[in-house]
Length: 293
Image 1 (cartoon, rainbow, N blue to C red):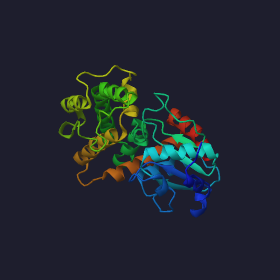
Image 2 (cartoon, rainbow, N blue to C red; image 1 turned 180 degrees about the horizontal axis):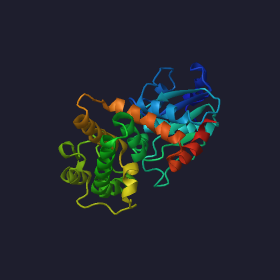
Image 3 (spheres, rainbow, N blue to C red; image 1 turned 30 degrees about the vertical axis):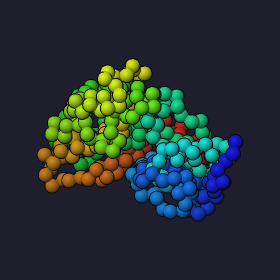
Image 4 (cartoon, helix red, strand yellow; image 1 turned 45 degrees about the vertical axis):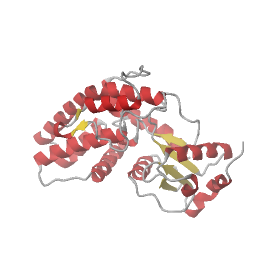
């Protein structure tokens, strides 16, 4: 197999960042393979913050530099070259999307995948959200009422969107466009009645993809799997609007941006992992952390 001439630059890239390992992940603008090998500092994204925070739980004494390159296709090219060149100074941290469900993951010892569809799904698990509510609203009646209301909202949302998540994976299996708009994650969410789903919008999009009826299912999800399996930015932004509106009604002076909300959830995720309150999530990441060794 002929390797692209720039691939050998992967071996020495860690030297430029004075690190033992360069960790490539998603997030930020999509860049090309050659641009990924540049020494630009592109480590200020939520993706790099998530992976650097979570993987710090499993220290191995190696210094890591985290770099976002946006484009999943570029990540796949780097994965291929890591395998072909047997490089141990590069790691890929990426969203699994539906790849694990469809057995489409690329065998690569230097790759770590998220637990759910994306890291956004991982940090909006209920125990993590409850931790944030306890931190911001306290453990009194207000906090308890907010947690119960959020539980009910997300349970209803899971039931409302489940069939569309099954459509999404069926389309993905056929290499079609997603039923959820990547450029506008909330196009199918009624924010006035958050978090209800605009089924008419999704039916229109399905028709535009070329289906008058839903494609044959390739996987059925139970409701407890939906939050982890749905398009991550749709889930995280929907949850953000739910939680922020609840806080505004309780504390009108408390206003959060989406980025701040997600950064706080990353902190709560790390706390939950350290407390071993999410054993399956912890076990998955512990196994994935070998990619950094």
